[in-house]
Image (tube, rainbow over the protein chains, first blue to last red):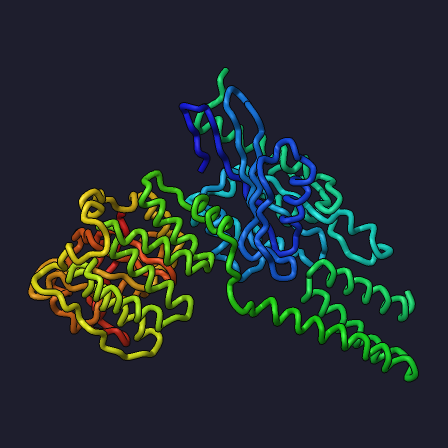
Length: 208
Length: 321
């Protein structure tokens, strides 16, 4: 639910990083915070967590400058991935304009990815949103782990992940490593592009 | 791959999962490794290896237990509470936004701050009752039954509520206590006449006069309801000898904005009131944390003719605002 201030020509929109627990949502935001200093307008708010688990949400405000005659401000959020924090996820998801789904490439987390995507679908419905209509980008995180421990960590192929998660959605996807930053920027840029295009269709804010 | 290499590889995998915070996955791998050691490694090295793995498993168990059972919700710094209050309130109307912000704070377990925010709303005539009930809910959610009781007693003395309002609060609190297995009759308001005396109120008279009659905007309230599971619904009887009394009915089933309620057969006055199409303007929707004011339309009302609830009535209420 973007806020469009007609008088000042300002748009404030919300992008939510969703995905199973420990898939790397917070690490994405941490990398963005470190790397895009020019665009980041305030501190990364990461609420104290138990063993690095997000209990509530992370929050990172960014300013993209003027696009189409409008000052664009974006607020990035993460949800807690652990199954038990369902009500918090719903609360954070409310009013989202775009979603980045961060999936875990570890083969052992295959089911968790699928369950989390189903959970997203359900929660979007409860917010009156549609997973096929909301700007959505998939990120296949932890691709760097395939080179670790002499290849002893089973990592899913991108094809397998596409088949599991993106067969029907057919949305843009990016292999990534939030830890090294590989693919993080591209994921964010694509998400912002889709979100702003969607808002342009809805609000017709850009000047021609 | 030799059995030793296999064990080594599994232990490496387990260790990576552990460092990644995937504790259950790490546990599974350590157990597989322990089984392989037990079955395949010679006597002299076996025990040492098993002891090492068992130690790792025990540590993992402790950590998993800690994560699965967090003691209490941590209290957030004021700046973060402010952020929640600001970012999780979606209404354009200022007072409704304050209510939403306070509800968000309570959902994030920030009960003390939520109580402070709800307390501010007690100044608003139209939100006073819903704010009061949310305050009581917060006390209960914060495991402070005593806090709720002392708050009620304080309100009785303060005179900020009308007699009708304090009666509803009393009824509400008694139900909360019942849910906790506490049967307790609460003191009634000692207010002469029909209404509380505003002059006794702790807030300035002008605040009451200025307070606009605002309700949570329909859209926002409907969306909020979709967020929340409604446990019970409070309906005010508008006709008959029990006029003004609030009846709380449990929700048997909820689908989006429709709730099915069971009206016990003994509630004759209530049964006579309900008709399909009847609009109920003063309905309260109770969720585990928040209470929302709203309205609803009776979409179906039928007598249950079989089963354990035979003789009771099934009331379908479509939340309309």
